[in-house]
Length: 197
Ligand code: S6P
Ligand code: ZN
Image 1 (tube, rainbow, N blue to C red):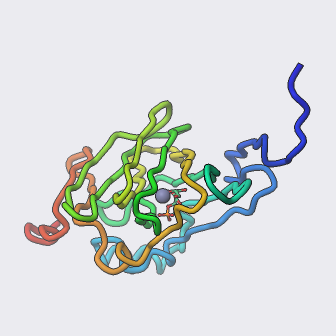
Image 2: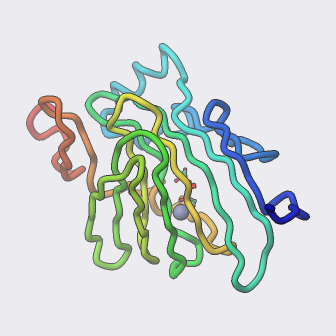
């Protein structure tokens, strides 16, 4: 016999169609919300004149606050590109820099781009259905969809991790993931435009 559920936050269902976790709001991030994030500014402006597409949704459950508590969110990142660069999430550090996060891939295929705050070392990790990525503290993280289907995942983190978007919004990640001859290729952002790309 299953235990009776006494608190609505004990059990949550995933709705892949709406991006909602049961009873929770769905935050929507459109192309226009990521102004300045994509390397190919001309392609960004052009895409925006056609359609302010939905890039991703986030729906979070925050059952409780305080020592030992966890929060989690469902992210659904749609497939597509701006110029040669795959759709991605804004990316952030946690406000509490030491806070780690566990990402559990549910559907789709892509990568996580990690960047350590102090060493500025970049790591690209394959991430999709049935794959789990541990994001250490002090590490900016961005999800990237290189597939043809939505990339759906859960992110599970300490209740007080917080989101610090400022540093990434200001200077972005040092690397970009582009499609080159049909394959994902990681490139230094600085090198963007050197050879006509
Ligand atoms: C939260 C976790 C994810 C992201 C989601 C959207 O700590 O890392 O739920 O919020 O992937 O990305 P972003 O960078 O727009 O918050
Ligand atoms: Zn996070």
